[in-house]
Length: 221
Ligand code: DGL
Image 1 (cartoon, rainbow, N blue to C red):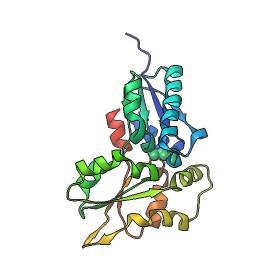
Image 2: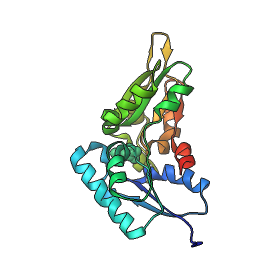
Image 3: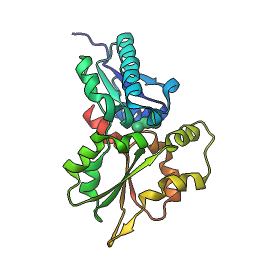
């Protein structure tokens, strides 16, 4: 048996997957890591599905051929909700995906009103709608698609943060108070968004739990 460390390949359209990497690396410090960011294809959230699926298979396939990982983490909701099934069908290596944390959010919500904040693509996907049908019984779920937040997160990490008004405009639709129920949990359904959690908290009209799925992904890994 080889005593070489296991190689874990982490894939995202950009820097968002680093929010998953930091949790996975803390859980598996013994592993070797390869991080693949498809910067040339960013942002994935604004691309047609047929173009994107072919691109993801191509980029992830090349990375698998080059690095022969023991496990691949698709650290991107936009890619996972679209291409996870195809990736699993095509490549023998095990995959761990990142999909909107609707089940835990509904389970933990006290007001039974949550929001799912993701790219336009992720909130429009049938995969996401199926999660709501399966796991959100008795819970109001608001789907909030953002065309800008992933780029804002890239800018934040690059040291060029956008202003508060820009952040407020993107998160405002998450906050709903109706029928005696106020949003108390927001699912961060894009791996870029945890890079903005401090900004979100500072610009929220009331405190909510911003649910980052990375610890759950790390446990799965
Ligand atoms: N990090 C990606 C996600 O989790 C999306 C960013 C993009 O639009 O490329 O959905």
